Length: 187
Image (cartoon, rainbow, N blue to C red; front, top):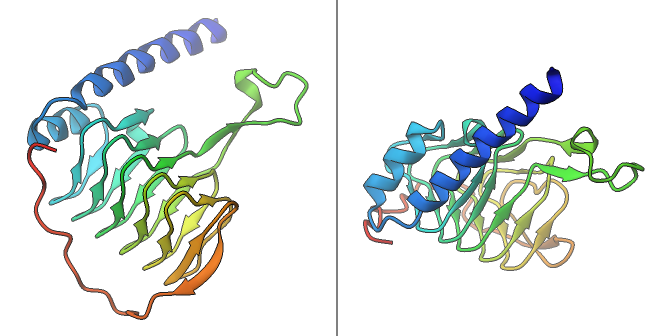
């Protein structure tokens, strides 16, 4: 019985994810945001999610105020995904908080998945095509370079890049107060 329930729940959320994927191509920010909120994504005021975003289990995804999620981003909600205020996530960024346990004999089994929350604090910038893996916290004001693969926490105002991501610099502005601007309605 438990297995049947789990399978039905999975099919239901796959259906929701498919609907959200379709909604992601509606050329109006306001309509997309309505559907995203309808299916449980918490989105703060002034935040925008550009076209083509992909979500896994939306109720665990929380996006703060005045944040921007770029085109074709992947946001994994199979565990908690918390994105702070004034966060700029560029196009094609992938944020995962669930992965297979490669050490397990039954590699592909649902019960052999490792889930860990991902937290992205305020004023973070994540460059295009970066990948953030389960269990990572990116602290206030940090910058993740384009194409970086983040496997461990990033400290406040540090700049990281590479595969795996390593510290390559530090932001000069330690007291950011900027606003990211208005939503791109048709993007």
